[in-house]
Length: 303
Image (cartoon, rainbow, N blue to C red; front, side):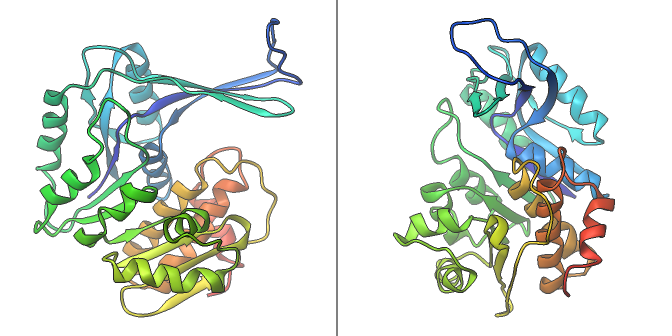
């Protein structure tokens, strides 16, 4: 079973308008409400690819209830901790000539709520996959990633981490199944600028030396690089297509890599292809990737 954790999920309220004028009434021409959060995105794409999974995290209030209802429509099994105070945040994304975002705060998470999440994590069994991704909200301890990794250590649960800088570096000694920085994040960690796949490879290997079993580096239009546990290195450009929306593309790559790894029985080259094509399929679509869209890209992406 695959499980995802999103510490501060959201409802994303997306609006489009010709121009956003401060201090005036602005009328939108398009609006949509979608589930938000990195782990939530992974869960949705995994479901789209045909892999049952359970979404963990925190939810509260009427917005939390709506988030769960939307996720159920996507076929995602929700098992959020229900928080008494506050509400699941609403993030406003206003798309005009420039894009403006206003992100909400989120519910008031207490230590008992954290303990309840740990209790759900204790239910994971040998062979399960746990995806932990995204930032840590201010109301949570900044060592949440490490606490989860330490709690799961020795239980034969494969953990995937998609985080930035210190959050990522501090979990490497726990040997996660794979990590997925982008080239800019990888460069920031090591104090360099990485623009090409050739430049990325040695630094991905450095991250592997620090503990990550596999390092998957996303590079937007430049493609991706995988330094795999078996010593192989895979790299390639992104499939050709028109960029529609980059939100969720990295999360989709995580879901695609997991899907490919499962369906190919551990073939890293095939998992890499699935990761790249799933991330691209989301980037080329107004919504998160479907299996049909991914398979369409796979059919013309080099093996």
